[in-house]
Length: 357
Image (cartoon, rainbow, N blue to C red; front, side):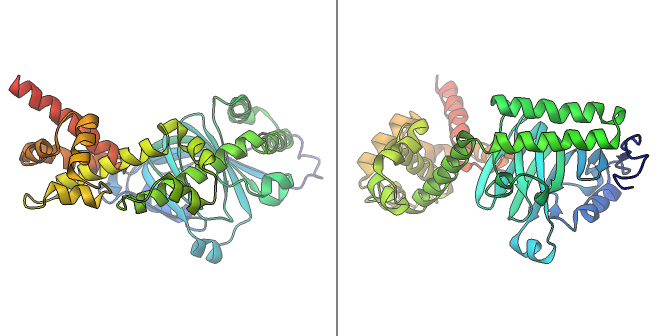
């Protein structure tokens, strides 16, 4: 039906329901439905018989509105997929429930309810979730203002942003009222949403926040690769990134500064090293491998941070029940091994104090 058709202004959008209940048929249909756009899978330990994907959608002349959700899953649009299966589309993706981790051509971001992110399918993209509910508004990249077409991949507005809150209200209102509107009215509203989104995501503060997050990720990744070198510090990191030391400090200011962040990362790494090591692997060697010049310096810093000595941690690591709990936490965790091992140590140390108290 074209816009010139006399019935166009009267027809209402037709709701299309996802027809498969949870299970293996749902999993197979989900993979097939998305195969032209992304490669998708579920975690290795997940049971396809329990897989859930659900939702409903409306097709408009210039957009596709999809309300969906599901259990643990991951999607990937690599450069090879982009080359093999090109598409001119972009998406506004709004998280309603759960958490989603996205990788936008190297920028990794955690999304929570209320976040609205731009996904440009002409650029590499990956995402994974343990379960989510969301609204996705898909549109032709060429149909939006030029400032929205370029360098928007991975831009995020949160519910704490005034513009993000307003954009979220508009998207949810469209879902709520679309079946009482005509196709023409619905498309006009979508056009308005996209123009507002273009203005919101073009705000300097939004792009600066994205660029700062990308720079911090690059800085932290670079530093982690060099932390075994005791001579690697803020000056070396600033030189590698080609930024001033003052800018580097501002980048790490939320983490207490560059030196404090590096010390914390070295200590986390050494803590993991102790747990993974054999009894004949000397603690002094573990300390050197994580950038400490002497065992004495390492022991003082370790004791100050964790309120337990490195040798006492090795004693805890000989307890099979405690180590089994650690392995379970790692399997259940989101990949942040440093945070997991510190949480385990706090729990194990607390239990030891109770036993000896």
